[in-house]
Image (tube, rainbow, N blue to C red):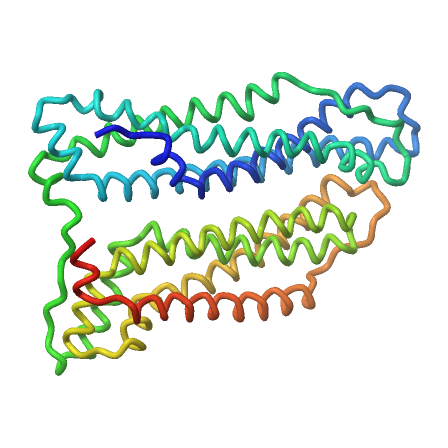
Amino acid sequence: MVIGIKDALKFIGISVVVVCAAFVCTLFLNYDLDLRVLSNIPDAALPLYNAQLSMGKAIAAISGCGLALTSVVLLVFYLKNYIDVHSKELGILKAMGYSRFSVAKRFWVFGLSVLLGAMIGFGAAYLYMPTFYSVQNADRLLPEIAVRFHVELLLFLVVLPTLVFAGLAVFYAFYKLKTPVLDLLREGREKTIKAHREKDGPFLKGLRLATLKSKKLLVFLIAFSAFCFSSMVQMSLSMLDLASETFAWMILMIGLILAFMTLLMSLSSVVKGNGKTIAMMRIFGYEYSVCSNQILGAYRPFSYVGFVVGTLYQFALLKLMLGVFFADVDIPAYTFDWKALLIALFAFVALYEFILFLYAQRIKKLSLKSVMEE
């Protein structure tokens, strides 16, 4: 089995997350480095100068670490799916005498998805940087700041993440390939549902629990998508009063990209991963609405939990940043924005339920024949 660039391109979700991480980190870290070379800072501008130095590192650390962890989770998710789908080919290679490492080392190509995202994010940040510098110093309290290129950022934000993720892909594949050959050859066979209609209550309850237990990573990803939507939308609306409109739009776009990309990827995996179960339920006479509610609806509570956590997170983060980094700067006092919460909640419910409805329509198109032919 040869792993090619086309296989790596399927990891586009990781590339999207890395684009956001590289873009934000490059902007704030480059601005921080250029800000440090300024001299003759006016006394009136010192509070703003110190606040921006601290805030730049904090935002880069918080967003960078958060997005990096998200990328790791997505990498594991994609690799697990890839190995499950190609388990028979991998089992045949092991049966032919190939060592675990000789097979696993080919997975380095999945690091290309990180390289692609990092390069795009890094380049986009430098294209946007002159505008960003102007926005950051809109009141002209600080001397004019020139945009400089820093090679060390290219190393730490593009080259190093690519090497780390390529190594992580190889390590994870090596770990997964410790599975015995016979188990690899059998892996991917899903357990079918055997039940009688008179046991609807216990069966459906058990099905919902089994769906969640077998797809624990999807539970996290769906909750995370709601977390991103909630925190970023509310934070961007609050930023309209606390910072620039450009900054608010940047936060909003990153949040929406992460939320929708993660949600769509997760729900697609839910429908595909439960294809045989849904088809068998249809044979037993269950309505489409029941199948949809038990499979897709099982994740609904976790999405709303993610929304609540995102609300609390964005409030605590803004309160911390404004209270610590901008304590000496004359800006409006920040209180919880109930209007932003209502707007975000209404938009989330409408969009999330609409997306669930669309995926419920996909369930209607599933048949046992089409599933078994895959």
